[in-house]
Length: 257
Ligand code: 13P
Image (cartoon, rainbow, N blue to C red; front, top):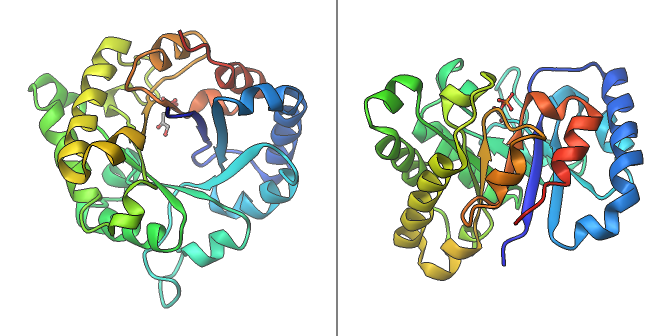
């Protein structure tokens, strides 16, 4: 069955010093139970690009994987301010969050650009975590599934068969991000089920069943258990609550009923 993934998206937070302190506290907490946790779950943190070298060093020998929050689709070239997959891989990065709603809405990334990044990540064997989610306005208009499934199909289009099982999806309703208003487990499960069905149409049953679909949007220690207990919710992408060692460590220990 699918393993749970608890991923922390630090967004644009922390200095190198603060990052080292946070990783040290996380390690002293999570590494203690590493063997037990490793039985059914994975843990990942995604710091800002400039902190990746420091965090990579601080994570040496830890059971926590390292992710990036974005990347360019080209390997190198005249793309001021960007970082590429080979650069990230050089620091032990294994996952990359792509198409986050802040990239879509603040930086105007569209489905086509996100798709090029997904294909580049897969080609470099970095696991892409494709984020999808509807805005409040789209939600109120009853268009959540239409928006999410369009983003999903566009984001994953053109993947080679050998890469299809290596992607992850994160459903992050925009109205739940940083608002303290998470989707209820039932609301999230409804969308996750539709995502799974769409993956089945796109890639077939076996691959669809193996792809992890995370939920993100105001996940806390108090609501994570009921979310990840739903059959199609395979983990959490955590923003604010991943910036404190105690809350993230508690989320990592989510109870799946
Ligand atoms: P919050 O957990 O702060 O709502 O952020 C969610 C998110 O955007 C994770 O990628």
